[in-house]
Image (cartoon, rainbow, N blue to C red; front, side, top):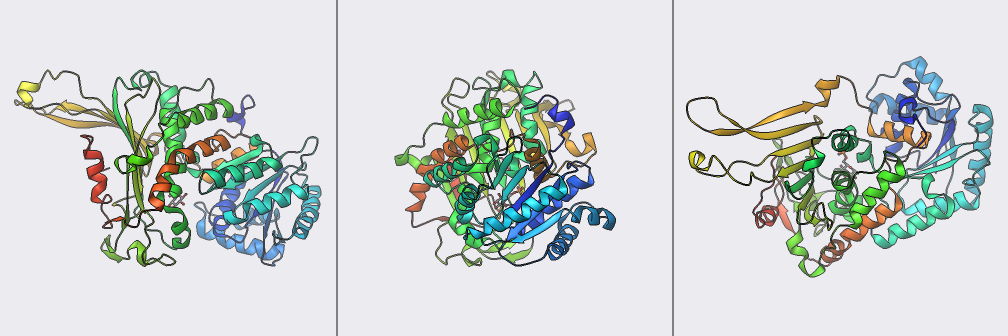
Amino acid sequence: MRPGLRLERNADPCTAVIFGASGDLTARMLIPSLFRLYQQNLLARGFAILGTARTDKTDDEFRDEMREAVAKYSSSEADDQVWERFARQLHYQAADTGNSEAFRHIEEKLEAIEKDRETGGNRLFYLSTPPSVYEGIVSGLNESELAARGSSAWRRIIVEKPFGRDLRSAQSLNEKLRSAFREEDIYRIDHYLGKETVQNIMVLRFANSIFEPLWDRRYIDHVQITGAEKIGVEDRGGYFEQAGVLRDMIQNHLFQIFSLIAMEPPISFDAGSVRDEKTKLIRSVRPLPPEEIDSVAVRGQYGAGVSDGEKVPGYREERQVAGDSTVETYAALKLYVDNWRWAGVPFYLRSGKRLPKRVTEVAIQFQRPPHSVFKQVLGGPVDSNALVIRIQPDDGISLKFSAKIPGQTFHLRPVHMDFHYGTSFGRRSPDAYERLLLDAMIGESTLFARGDMVEASWQVVMPLLEHWKNQQEIDFYEPGTWGPACADEFIEADGRRWRRP
Ligand code: BG6
């Protein structure tokens, strides 16, 4: 990382070339985020966007569509004059990337834009297409030399998840990407890393001295990482049938959070050091025993029921979902990290759709005091402390501890010391995409997934994927509950309980 980068955060001039420019992500996230960066003066003067997709359209038609998208999806108001200025930088080129001619057309258009907008020839490619065409596009970029670096101009590529669907396909995608780009120019986006509280995990741990001395097996009983969603699969049934929640949420988003919580302190806050430690952590995860999978992981699928007073379909009744699908919409697993810090401490990870609420959090559950001075007066053990890092919504941190209830009798109750981002800072946090797009234009890759960590994460979940692939049955749960009954039995077998956030 360049010195002072975090303070200046100046984006380099460049052209962002978006493959999949007619898609949902471009309309919902990419253009609104780029526009917000523009509104805040965070883009370089020499900046342009070249959208490309199969459909024929002119620059103006593309601009009109994107104007509508920003009106619909942006969290900030779009002033017409500001939009007009921004829109001059938007361009479009129809291209069927299955055809090598397409890359020649892109090149011609790109060269004209680069000259006109003075982008210094820097190119930021964005793969916002279905993953099935990733490798074809990267080959096209490579063969057409669109990805070839100039003497001073850079070439970077942002890739959307999923990064493969198992270890082998992830390796193949990485190989393909590395045949055209250097690893440091490959930005694998995991939008959870752009969330303010996820970044704050590192600050909590390493910019304070009171937590780290407690951060190990001597004081921590276990850790729970929850990524719960209230919604079902909505209109993404076709995609979800190929994914399941293990691939969709756990192997990537929850593993990123897990690695930040459990990694060793990096020597500094630069991309290499941080990502080395995260990768090392994932590599230290004890391999899941294929013959005992059912004791370290459980899964379930939501049935039909009622959510917020409304009738909702079961997963099998969702559009593009097989009537006898056994794809999991809920999964929970227990991981151990085989190193000195964490020996014997279980990390429970769970994620599901159609749970009671949308909440992502990490709960560090401390051990009970080794000896209860109050045993006789209380008649039982005291509660354990918990440090809860709320990632969303209402991001913040809360510390649970016991306090005496005022009065003549001696009763204890858990109380919370609470920190809320919203009230403490009173300002809007940048959206994850805004943050990450800017980072990629700066050349700052700390908050992106590195290829070796992605592969190590697949390696961990492979035994689960293999095991579940062959199972003909799945447990169901009712919408608005915390998953199937087996999820409770699973953790209770260890003498522990899930939090009900
Ligand atoms: C995406 C998954 O990566 O993350 C979705 O594909 C999921 O299924 C989403 O709903 C959750 O993101 P967030 O930011 O709403 O927690």
